[in-house]
Image 1: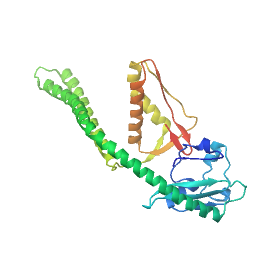
Image 2 (image 1 turned 120 degrees about the vertical axis):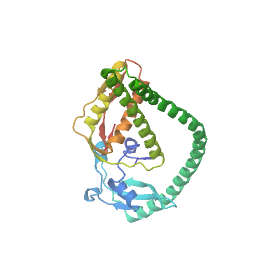
Image 3 (image 1 turned 60 degrees about the horizontal axis):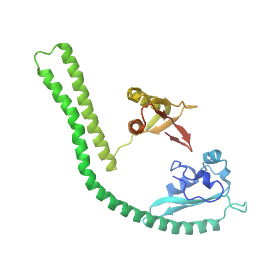
Image 4 (image 1 turned 60 degrees about the vertical axis):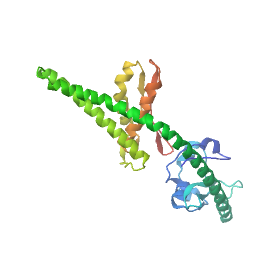
Length: 281
């Protein structure tokens, strides 16, 4: 969930803040598709106090209504905090907010549908242009390891090769096969993501260990480019619940971009920090 279109109080400080979709009163409302009236947050176990701690704001009373489209899809919620007269919100306030939420959901849904239709039209046009480019890139990427494998196989077939030479050729051959296997895996992952059938296997991951591993993987190229690569130490252990393979892919792509667009002799910093119950890399 992302805080969006806020007014009054701590609105400016919270705008753009992200929280997990299942926490707090608003998380309960969007998950269950039902409204909530909380006269006293200190007596409601659903209340998520982390935002108050980070934003220096005290939430005393909440009224929240889901944004449900005509297709019965919950796209978010409207939440009001702390009534201006200092009193707790009432059932009348909730009824008003629910009517208002119905109109907002309709407007937002229509706007999103229009934007999606426009975007899809542009995407289809771009797809035709990019398809040929993608095939060209794939052909080029596959050709390199295939050439390595072919050359290695030809060298192995020579009767004059010594055992040392054969061992070196086998090592080159293994690298070529590994590169080809990795390329096929990447293509398969891209296909799975685009078709929304990628399986995610979550497990607890130590953020510091992950950052150190990513840094070590890229240390040879950063040293060759004289890039100053630093990993900021976390003040305390942080564990994230994620798919280690996919998270590593994301971070490796970010590192590749950072290396590609940082001039020789420049600096790259890897860090992670907790924020509103999540971890930002």
